[in-house]
Image (tube, rainbow, N blue to C red; front, side, top):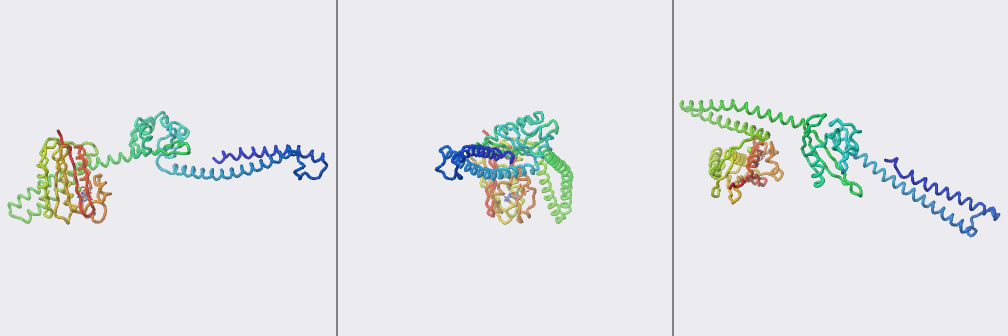
Length: 432
Ligand SMILES: Nc1ncnc2c1ncn2[C@@H]1O[C@H](COP(=O)(O)OP(=O)(O)O)[C@@H](O)[C@H]1O
Ligand SMILES: [Mg+2]
Protein backbone atom coordinates (compact mmCIF):
# COMPACT_ATOMS: atom_id res chain seq x y z
CA UNK A 1 0.00 0.00 0.00
CA UNK A 2 2.77 2.38 1.00
CA UNK A 3 4.66 1.71 -2.26
CA UNK A 4 1.80 3.08 -4.32
CA UNK A 5 2.26 6.43 -2.68
CA UNK A 6 1.91 9.46 -5.06
CA UNK A 7 5.17 10.99 -3.70
CA UNK A 8 7.13 9.17 -6.40
CA UNK A 9 4.95 10.71 -9.08
CA UNK A 10 4.69 14.27 -7.76
CA UNK A 11 8.22 15.13 -6.65
CA UNK A 12 10.05 14.43 -9.94
CA UNK A 13 7.41 16.40 -11.82
CA UNK A 14 8.06 19.59 -9.84
CA UNK A 15 11.79 18.85 -9.60
CA UNK A 16 12.08 18.57 -13.35
CA UNK A 17 10.08 21.70 -13.89
CA UNK A 18 12.39 23.61 -11.53
CA UNK A 19 15.51 22.31 -13.29
CA UNK A 20 14.14 23.23 -16.70
CA UNK A 21 13.39 26.77 -15.56
CA UNK A 22 16.80 27.14 -13.92
CA UNK A 23 18.54 26.10 -17.12
CA UNK A 24 16.45 28.50 -19.12
CA UNK A 25 17.10 31.31 -16.64
CA UNK A 26 20.88 30.74 -16.71
CA UNK A 27 20.87 30.86 -20.49
CA UNK A 28 18.84 34.05 -20.56
CA UNK A 29 20.47 35.90 -17.69
CA UNK A 30 24.18 35.09 -17.98
CA UNK A 31 24.83 36.43 -21.48
CA UNK A 32 23.17 39.70 -20.52
CA UNK A 33 25.48 40.16 -17.57
CA UNK A 34 28.54 39.72 -19.74
CA UNK A 35 27.16 42.07 -22.36
CA UNK A 36 26.73 44.90 -19.86
CA UNK A 37 30.09 44.17 -18.18
CA UNK A 38 28.52 44.69 -14.81
CA UNK A 39 29.60 42.55 -11.76
CA UNK A 40 26.16 41.89 -10.26
CA UNK A 41 22.71 41.29 -11.61
CA UNK A 42 20.82 41.78 -8.32
CA UNK A 43 19.37 45.06 -9.39
CA UNK A 44 15.84 44.22 -10.56
CA UNK A 45 15.38 47.31 -12.65
CA UNK A 46 18.15 46.14 -14.95
CA UNK A 47 16.20 42.94 -15.83
CA UNK A 48 14.46 42.65 -19.12
CA UNK A 49 10.71 41.81 -18.92
CA UNK A 50 11.53 38.29 -20.13
CA UNK A 51 14.05 37.82 -17.31
CA UNK A 52 11.56 39.10 -14.75
CA UNK A 53 8.96 36.65 -15.99
CA UNK A 54 11.43 33.84 -15.52
CA UNK A 55 12.31 34.94 -11.99
CA UNK A 56 8.59 35.06 -11.07
CA UNK A 57 8.12 31.65 -12.58
CA UNK A 58 11.04 30.38 -10.54
CA UNK A 59 9.44 31.67 -7.35
CA UNK A 60 6.14 30.13 -8.29
CA UNK A 61 7.78 26.77 -8.88
CA UNK A 62 9.53 26.98 -5.53
CA UNK A 63 6.21 27.64 -3.85
CA UNK A 64 4.59 24.78 -5.70
CA UNK A 65 7.42 22.54 -4.59
CA UNK A 66 6.90 23.54 -0.96
CA UNK A 67 3.17 23.05 -1.25
CA UNK A 68 3.64 19.66 -2.86
CA UNK A 69 5.93 18.55 -0.06
CA UNK A 70 3.33 19.59 2.48
CA UNK A 71 0.62 17.59 0.70
CA UNK A 72 2.95 14.64 0.50
CA UNK A 73 3.65 14.62 4.22
CA UNK A 74 -0.05 14.92 4.93
CA UNK A 75 -0.76 12.07 2.56
CA UNK A 76 1.83 10.08 4.43
CA UNK A 77 -0.12 10.43 7.66
CA UNK A 78 -3.45 9.48 6.05
CA UNK A 79 -1.77 6.63 4.32
CA UNK A 80 -0.29 5.40 7.55
CA UNK A 81 -3.68 5.59 9.23
CA UNK A 82 -5.18 3.66 6.36
CA UNK A 83 -2.50 1.01 6.63
CA UNK A 84 -3.07 0.71 10.36
CA UNK A 85 -6.84 0.34 9.86
CA UNK A 86 -6.29 -2.22 7.15
CA UNK A 87 -3.78 -4.18 9.22
CA UNK A 88 -6.19 -4.06 12.10
CA UNK A 89 -9.07 -5.41 10.00
CA UNK A 90 -6.79 -8.05 8.49
CA UNK A 91 -5.66 -9.13 11.94
CA UNK A 92 -9.26 -9.46 13.10
CA UNK A 93 -10.22 -11.55 10.11
CA UNK A 94 -7.19 -13.77 10.56
CA UNK A 95 -7.71 -14.15 14.30
CA UNK A 96 -11.34 -15.20 14.12
CA UNK A 97 -11.41 -18.95 14.56
CA UNK A 98 -14.43 -19.54 12.39
CA UNK A 99 -14.43 -19.25 8.61
CA UNK A 100 -14.93 -15.68 7.47
CA UNK A 101 -15.35 -14.17 4.01
CA UNK A 102 -15.28 -10.58 2.86
CA UNK A 103 -17.30 -10.16 -0.34
CA UNK A 104 -18.03 -7.18 -2.49
CA UNK A 105 -21.56 -6.33 -3.50
CA UNK A 106 -21.37 -8.61 -6.55
CA UNK A 107 -20.52 -11.47 -4.17
CA UNK A 108 -16.94 -11.65 -5.36
CA UNK A 109 -14.52 -12.75 -2.64
CA UNK A 110 -12.17 -9.98 -1.54
CA UNK A 111 -10.55 -11.96 1.22
CA UNK A 112 -10.95 -15.10 3.25
CA UNK A 113 -9.27 -16.28 6.42
CA UNK A 114 -7.20 -19.40 7.15
CA UNK A 115 -10.14 -21.01 8.91
CA UNK A 116 -12.18 -20.78 5.72
CA UNK A 117 -9.45 -22.41 3.63
CA UNK A 118 -9.04 -25.19 6.18
CA UNK A 119 -12.69 -25.89 6.75
CA UNK A 120 -13.72 -25.95 3.11
CA UNK A 121 -10.51 -27.37 1.66
CA UNK A 122 -9.90 -24.61 -0.85
CA UNK A 123 -6.73 -22.71 -1.76
CA UNK A 124 -6.33 -18.90 -1.60
CA UNK A 125 -5.52 -18.78 -5.33
CA UNK A 126 -8.78 -20.47 -6.20
CA UNK A 127 -10.72 -18.26 -3.83
CA UNK A 128 -9.71 -14.62 -3.94
CA UNK A 129 -11.37 -12.56 -6.65
CA UNK A 130 -13.68 -15.42 -7.51
CA UNK A 131 -17.45 -15.23 -7.38
CA UNK A 132 -18.70 -17.02 -4.29
CA UNK A 133 -20.99 -19.27 -6.29
CA UNK A 134 -18.13 -20.35 -8.58
CA UNK A 135 -15.91 -21.60 -5.78
CA UNK A 136 -14.79 -25.24 -6.03
CA UNK A 137 -16.81 -26.32 -9.05
CA UNK A 138 -19.78 -24.21 -8.07
CA UNK A 139 -20.11 -26.05 -4.76
CA UNK A 140 -21.31 -22.88 -3.13
CA UNK A 141 -24.10 -22.38 -5.56
CA UNK A 142 -26.65 -23.18 -2.84
CA UNK A 143 -30.21 -21.98 -3.48
CA UNK A 144 -30.86 -21.11 0.16
CA UNK A 145 -27.63 -19.12 0.32
CA UNK A 146 -28.53 -17.24 -2.86
CA UNK A 147 -31.86 -16.18 -1.40
CA UNK A 148 -30.09 -15.14 1.77
CA UNK A 149 -27.43 -13.00 0.11
CA UNK A 150 -29.41 -11.66 -2.81
CA UNK A 151 -32.79 -11.03 -1.25
CA UNK A 152 -32.69 -10.98 2.52
CA UNK A 153 -29.32 -9.29 3.17
CA UNK A 154 -29.79 -6.26 0.87
CA UNK A 155 -33.02 -5.54 2.65
CA UNK A 156 -32.05 -6.17 6.25
CA UNK A 157 -28.27 -5.50 6.22
CA UNK A 158 -27.69 -8.17 8.83
CA UNK A 159 -28.44 -11.85 9.04
CA UNK A 160 -28.16 -13.77 12.26
CA UNK A 161 -27.88 -17.51 12.82
CA UNK A 162 -29.27 -18.68 9.53
CA UNK A 163 -28.99 -22.46 9.16
CA UNK A 164 -27.99 -23.87 5.78
CA UNK A 165 -27.47 -27.54 5.03
CA UNK A 166 -25.49 -28.62 2.04
CA UNK A 167 -23.77 -31.67 0.66
CA UNK A 168 -20.27 -30.58 -0.44
CA UNK A 169 -18.41 -32.70 -2.95
CA UNK A 170 -15.14 -32.75 -1.03
CA UNK A 171 -16.17 -32.52 2.57
CA UNK A 172 -19.60 -34.14 2.61
CA UNK A 173 -22.85 -33.13 4.27
CA UNK A 174 -22.48 -29.99 6.37
CA UNK A 175 -24.77 -27.90 8.49
CA UNK A 176 -23.67 -24.29 8.61
CA UNK A 177 -24.71 -21.38 10.73
CA UNK A 178 -24.43 -18.15 8.76
CA UNK A 179 -24.07 -14.63 10.08
CA UNK A 180 -23.71 -11.78 7.64
CA UNK A 181 -23.47 -8.01 7.69
CA UNK A 182 -23.27 -5.35 5.04
CA UNK A 183 -20.65 -2.65 5.52
CA UNK A 184 -20.83 0.60 3.60
CA UNK A 185 -17.38 1.90 2.67
CA UNK A 186 -15.90 5.07 1.29
CA UNK A 187 -17.56 8.18 -0.16
CA UNK A 188 -19.27 6.27 -2.97
CA UNK A 189 -20.83 3.95 -0.39
CA UNK A 190 -19.94 0.74 -2.15
CA UNK A 191 -20.80 -2.07 0.15
CA UNK A 192 -18.80 -4.98 1.46
CA UNK A 193 -20.36 -8.09 2.89
CA UNK A 194 -18.91 -9.83 5.91
CA UNK A 195 -19.97 -13.46 5.95
CA UNK A 196 -19.16 -15.69 8.92
CA UNK A 197 -19.72 -19.37 8.43
CA UNK A 198 -19.86 -21.69 11.39
CA UNK A 199 -19.79 -25.41 10.79
CA UNK A 200 -22.24 -26.84 13.31
CA UNK A 201 -22.43 -30.33 11.81
CA UNK A 202 -20.65 -31.99 14.69
CA UNK A 203 -22.45 -30.03 17.36
CA UNK A 204 -25.76 -30.96 15.79
CA UNK A 205 -24.82 -34.62 15.68
CA UNK A 206 -23.86 -34.54 19.35
CA UNK A 207 -27.13 -32.84 20.16
CA UNK A 208 -28.97 -35.57 18.28
CA UNK A 209 -27.06 -38.29 20.08
CA UNK A 210 -27.89 -36.66 23.39
CA UNK A 211 -31.58 -36.51 22.49
CA UNK A 212 -31.51 -40.14 21.45
CA UNK A 213 -29.81 -41.10 24.68
CA UNK A 214 -32.37 -39.23 26.77
CA UNK A 215 -35.15 -40.85 24.79
CA UNK A 216 -33.82 -44.38 25.28
CA UNK A 217 -32.95 -43.78 28.93
CA UNK A 218 -36.39 -42.47 29.77
CA UNK A 219 -38.05 -45.38 28.00
CA UNK A 220 -35.91 -47.83 29.93
CA UNK A 221 -36.65 -46.08 33.23
CA UNK A 222 -40.37 -46.12 32.63
CA UNK A 223 -40.77 -49.91 32.68
CA UNK A 224 -39.26 -50.64 36.12
CA UNK A 225 -41.09 -47.68 37.63
CA UNK A 226 -44.39 -49.01 36.36
CA UNK A 227 -43.76 -52.34 38.09
CA UNK A 228 -42.54 -50.73 41.32
CA UNK A 229 -45.78 -48.76 41.30
CA UNK A 230 -47.79 -51.94 40.87
CA UNK A 231 -45.96 -53.52 43.83
CA UNK A 232 -46.62 -50.53 46.07
CA UNK A 233 -50.31 -50.84 45.31
CA UNK A 234 -50.32 -54.52 46.25
CA UNK A 235 -48.37 -53.76 49.42
CA UNK A 236 -50.79 -50.93 50.24
CA UNK A 237 -53.74 -53.33 50.02
CA UNK A 238 -51.97 -55.85 52.23
CA UNK A 239 -51.16 -53.29 54.93
CA UNK A 240 -54.71 -52.01 54.80
CA UNK A 241 -56.04 -55.52 55.30
CA UNK A 242 -53.67 -56.02 58.23
CA UNK A 243 -54.82 -52.65 59.62
CA UNK A 244 -51.20 -51.46 59.68
CA UNK A 245 -52.10 -47.81 59.06
CA UNK A 246 -48.58 -46.46 59.69
CA UNK A 247 -47.28 -48.61 56.82
CA UNK A 248 -50.22 -47.61 54.61
CA UNK A 249 -49.26 -43.98 55.11
CA UNK A 250 -45.63 -44.68 54.18
CA UNK A 251 -46.67 -46.62 51.10
CA UNK A 252 -48.91 -43.73 50.00
CA UNK A 253 -45.99 -41.32 50.31
CA UNK A 254 -43.88 -43.69 48.29
CA UNK A 255 -46.59 -43.88 45.66
CA UNK A 256 -46.81 -40.10 45.31
CA UNK A 257 -43.01 -39.86 44.95
CA UNK A 258 -43.23 -42.48 42.22
CA UNK A 259 -45.83 -40.31 40.48
CA UNK A 260 -43.40 -37.39 40.55
CA UNK A 261 -40.69 -39.57 39.06
CA UNK A 262 -43.08 -40.74 36.34
CA UNK A 263 -43.93 -37.11 35.54
CA UNK A 264 -40.27 -36.17 35.23
CA UNK A 265 -39.62 -39.07 32.90
CA UNK A 266 -42.74 -38.15 30.96
CA UNK A 267 -41.40 -34.61 30.49
CA UNK A 268 -38.06 -35.93 29.26
CA UNK A 269 -39.81 -38.21 26.80
CA UNK A 270 -42.04 -35.37 25.59
CA UNK A 271 -39.05 -33.14 24.94
CA UNK A 272 -37.30 -35.75 22.84
CA UNK A 273 -40.56 -36.23 20.94
CA UNK A 274 -40.86 -32.48 20.32
CA UNK A 275 -37.27 -32.28 19.10
CA UNK A 276 -37.80 -35.16 16.72
CA UNK A 277 -41.19 -33.80 15.62
CA UNK A 278 -42.83 -36.98 16.85
CA UNK A 279 -45.31 -35.62 19.39
CA UNK A 280 -48.75 -36.84 18.42
CA UNK A 281 -52.08 -35.25 19.08
CA UNK A 282 -55.43 -36.98 19.41
CA UNK A 283 -57.90 -34.25 18.74
CA UNK A 284 -61.60 -34.07 19.51
CA UNK A 285 -64.32 -31.58 20.49
CA UNK A 286 -64.66 -31.20 24.24
CA UNK A 287 -66.14 -28.90 26.84
CA UNK A 288 -63.43 -26.50 28.00
CA UNK A 289 -64.79 -25.73 31.48
CA UNK A 290 -65.16 -29.46 32.20
CA UNK A 291 -61.45 -29.89 31.61
CA UNK A 292 -60.59 -26.89 33.79
CA UNK A 293 -62.82 -28.00 36.68
CA UNK A 294 -61.53 -31.55 36.53
CA UNK A 295 -57.88 -30.47 36.53
CA UNK A 296 -58.34 -27.93 39.32
CA UNK A 297 -60.02 -30.55 41.47
CA UNK A 298 -57.13 -32.95 40.88
CA UNK A 299 -54.49 -30.34 41.74
CA UNK A 300 -56.43 -29.06 44.74
CA UNK A 301 -55.86 -32.46 46.28
CA UNK A 302 -52.09 -31.97 46.13
CA UNK A 303 -52.02 -28.80 48.20
CA UNK A 304 -53.46 -27.92 51.58
CA UNK A 305 -52.02 -24.44 51.77
CA UNK A 306 -53.42 -23.03 48.52
CA UNK A 307 -57.05 -22.47 47.74
CA UNK A 308 -57.57 -22.65 43.96
CA UNK A 309 -60.40 -20.28 43.04
CA UNK A 310 -62.21 -20.62 39.73
CA UNK A 311 -63.67 -17.66 37.84
CA UNK A 312 -64.96 -19.23 34.67
CA UNK A 313 -67.03 -17.65 31.94
CA UNK A 314 -69.76 -19.76 30.26
CA UNK A 315 -68.15 -22.76 28.69
CA UNK A 316 -67.43 -23.43 25.05
CA UNK A 317 -66.60 -26.49 23.06
CA UNK A 318 -63.03 -26.44 21.85
CA UNK A 319 -61.25 -28.70 19.42
CA UNK A 320 -57.90 -30.18 20.41
CA UNK A 321 -56.04 -32.84 22.35
CA UNK A 322 -57.83 -32.83 25.70
CA UNK A 323 -55.09 -34.68 27.59
CA UNK A 324 -52.32 -32.51 26.24
CA UNK A 325 -54.21 -29.29 26.99
CA UNK A 326 -54.88 -30.70 30.45
CA UNK A 327 -51.13 -31.23 30.76
CA UNK A 328 -50.56 -27.52 30.06
CA UNK A 329 -53.04 -26.59 32.77
CA UNK A 330 -51.44 -29.03 35.22
CA UNK A 331 -48.07 -27.47 34.49
CA UNK A 332 -49.34 -23.93 35.06
CA UNK A 333 -51.00 -25.00 38.31
CA UNK A 334 -48.07 -27.02 39.70
CA UNK A 335 -45.81 -24.07 38.96
CA UNK A 336 -48.23 -21.66 40.60
CA UNK A 337 -48.24 -23.84 43.71
CA UNK A 338 -44.49 -24.44 43.66
CA UNK A 339 -43.48 -20.81 43.10
CA UNK A 340 -45.82 -19.24 45.66
CA UNK A 341 -44.88 -21.02 48.87
CA UNK A 342 -46.01 -18.14 51.08
CA UNK A 343 -49.34 -17.43 49.40
CA UNK A 344 -52.58 -19.21 49.97
CA UNK A 345 -54.59 -18.35 46.90
CA UNK A 346 -54.43 -19.18 43.20
CA UNK A 347 -57.00 -17.90 40.72
CA UNK A 348 -57.93 -19.81 37.58
CA UNK A 349 -60.05 -17.81 35.18
CA UNK A 350 -61.31 -18.06 31.62
CA UNK A 351 -62.21 -15.38 29.10
CA UNK A 352 -64.32 -16.22 26.11
CA UNK A 353 -64.93 -14.11 23.03
CA UNK A 354 -66.07 -15.00 19.55
CA UNK A 355 -62.57 -15.90 18.32
CA UNK A 356 -60.70 -17.24 21.33
CA UNK A 357 -60.93 -18.88 24.67
CA UNK A 358 -58.27 -17.70 27.11
CA UNK A 359 -57.16 -19.38 30.28
CA UNK A 360 -55.27 -17.58 33.06
CA UNK A 361 -53.59 -19.02 36.14
CA UNK A 362 -52.69 -16.30 38.60
CA UNK A 363 -50.48 -16.78 41.63
CA UNK A 364 -49.17 -14.43 44.31
CA UNK A 365 -45.69 -15.85 44.58
CA UNK A 366 -42.10 -15.05 43.74
CA UNK A 367 -42.88 -13.53 40.33
CA UNK A 368 -40.52 -13.09 37.40
CA UNK A 369 -38.33 -10.26 36.14
CA UNK A 370 -38.95 -9.01 32.59
CA UNK A 371 -35.75 -10.70 31.46
CA UNK A 372 -36.83 -14.06 32.85
CA UNK A 373 -40.34 -13.69 31.46
CA UNK A 374 -38.83 -13.70 28.00
CA UNK A 375 -36.98 -16.97 28.64
CA UNK A 376 -39.17 -19.19 30.83
CA UNK A 377 -40.65 -20.96 27.82
CA UNK A 378 -37.18 -21.98 26.58
CA UNK A 379 -35.97 -25.53 26.90
CA UNK A 380 -34.17 -26.24 30.22
CA UNK A 381 -34.55 -22.62 31.32
CA UNK A 382 -34.80 -22.18 35.06
CA UNK A 383 -34.53 -18.89 36.87
CA UNK A 384 -31.20 -18.62 38.68
CA UNK A 385 -30.58 -17.13 42.09
CA UNK A 386 -30.56 -18.40 45.63
CA UNK A 387 -34.29 -18.50 46.22
CA UNK A 388 -34.93 -20.43 43.02
CA UNK A 389 -32.31 -23.03 43.82
CA UNK A 390 -34.63 -24.43 46.45
CA UNK A 391 -37.33 -25.35 43.92
CA UNK A 392 -36.71 -28.68 42.21
CA UNK A 393 -37.37 -29.12 38.50
CA UNK A 394 -35.88 -29.68 35.07
CA UNK A 395 -37.06 -26.51 33.35
CA UNK A 396 -39.03 -28.45 30.78
CA UNK A 397 -42.68 -28.02 31.76
CA UNK A 398 -43.23 -24.59 30.19
CA UNK A 399 -41.26 -25.51 27.09
CA UNK A 400 -43.54 -28.49 26.54
CA UNK A 401 -46.62 -26.43 27.39
CA UNK A 402 -45.73 -23.74 24.86
CA UNK A 403 -45.10 -26.34 22.18
CA UNK A 404 -48.48 -27.95 22.83
CA UNK A 405 -50.27 -24.59 22.63
CA UNK A 406 -48.42 -23.54 19.49
CA UNK A 407 -49.29 -26.82 17.83
CA UNK A 408 -52.93 -25.95 18.59
CA UNK A 409 -52.34 -22.63 16.79
CA UNK A 410 -52.76 -20.83 20.09
CA UNK A 411 -50.71 -18.31 22.01
CA UNK A 412 -48.97 -18.64 25.36
CA UNK A 413 -47.56 -15.86 27.54
CA UNK A 414 -46.87 -14.65 31.04
CA UNK A 415 -47.61 -11.44 32.90
CA UNK A 416 -45.64 -10.96 36.07
CA UNK A 417 -44.16 -8.64 38.64
CA UNK A 418 -41.15 -9.70 40.67
CA UNK A 419 -42.15 -10.59 44.25
CA UNK A 420 -45.82 -9.91 43.48
CA UNK A 421 -46.79 -12.96 41.48
CA UNK A 422 -47.28 -14.29 37.97
CA UNK A 423 -50.16 -14.99 35.63
CA UNK A 424 -49.54 -17.66 33.04
CA UNK A 425 -51.97 -17.61 30.13
CA UNK A 426 -52.84 -19.35 26.93
CA UNK A 427 -55.49 -18.70 24.36
CA UNK A 428 -56.87 -21.11 21.80
CA UNK A 429 -58.61 -20.14 18.58
CA UNK A 430 -62.28 -21.06 18.51
CA UNK A 431 -63.14 -23.56 15.82
CA UNK A 432 -66.19 -22.95 13.66
N1 LIG B 1 -45.67 -19.35 38.50
C1 LIG B 1 -44.35 -19.07 38.46
N2 LIG B 1 -43.81 -18.09 39.21
C2 LIG B 1 -42.50 -17.79 39.17
N3 LIG B 1 -41.61 -18.43 38.39
C3 LIG B 1 -42.08 -19.42 37.60
C4 LIG B 1 -43.45 -19.79 37.58
N4 LIG B 1 -43.61 -20.80 36.68
C5 LIG B 1 -42.39 -21.03 36.17
N5 LIG B 1 -41.46 -20.22 36.72
C6 LIG B 1 -40.04 -20.17 36.39
O1 LIG B 1 -39.86 -20.73 35.09
C7 LIG B 1 -38.94 -21.81 35.11
C8 LIG B 1 -39.37 -22.85 34.10
O2 LIG B 1 -40.58 -23.49 34.50
P1 LIG B 1 -40.84 -24.97 34.08
O3 LIG B 1 -40.55 -25.08 32.64
O4 LIG B 1 -42.18 -25.37 34.54
O5 LIG B 1 -39.69 -25.79 34.82
P2 LIG B 1 -39.54 -26.26 36.32
O6 LIG B 1 -40.80 -25.94 37.04
O7 LIG B 1 -39.30 -27.71 36.21
O8 LIG B 1 -38.37 -25.53 36.84
C9 LIG B 1 -38.96 -22.29 36.54
O9 LIG B 1 -37.74 -22.87 36.89
C10 LIG B 1 -39.22 -21.02 37.33
O10 LIG B 1 -38.00 -20.38 37.56
MG1 LIG C 1 -42.70 -26.69 36.17
